[in-house]
Image (cartoon, rainbow, N blue to C red; front, side, top):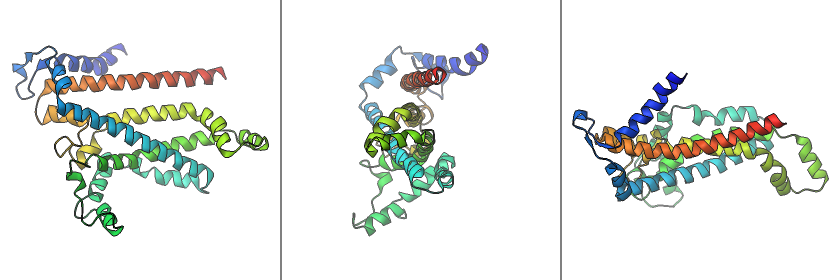
Length: 281
């Protein structure tokens, strides 16, 4: 077990950290030169990478936030309103089970400047007079992939929410209604406390997934134009396999690893709390 962990987990991490201290081309690895913290200093001082980090922050926070809210509402509607919730849950899962590249291609076509349905809809509603090349605009190119990512992740959170709702004993709501509790008070004092750990775990998993998400942006915009829609994973790919700068790619990978390590720590902490309460009961 220790050998497997060392070979497949610890060694690649250690190798990436080691490579981040070198100026090294993927085309001429034998000419690598030790550079100390030069790659990290370049990250710290580069306006381009600052833009990439800001894009990553917007991508993760806005995309995850909207996906969570939309997923929660969908889960609640399936629990309260829909007579065939099991059938609905199977249908809404389609975006999640589709291959990532297929989903991204669908949204790339929908946001297409000349043939996409999004432009047709905007023109029909009178919101714009002419087609907008959204995937080629430095002002808005990050937002179409965010829409595609929300479409993919919201159903997953909806199923998590639906399962959490179904796990709450109806007698709690009946007792609350008999005591005169309003729907908001039932939600605040029964639903949220009982669902808090499930929601927290879903939230952290969503953040971790989005931070390392690569395919949606790469298929739709390839991070462009310029770096207007480039996030950290896309930047790492560009540095490694477009610019062949494996030293900088390794330094960025270490940065991404540290961010994921923080979220993973909180995920394990919440999971342990759930296990502790479950065993206590």
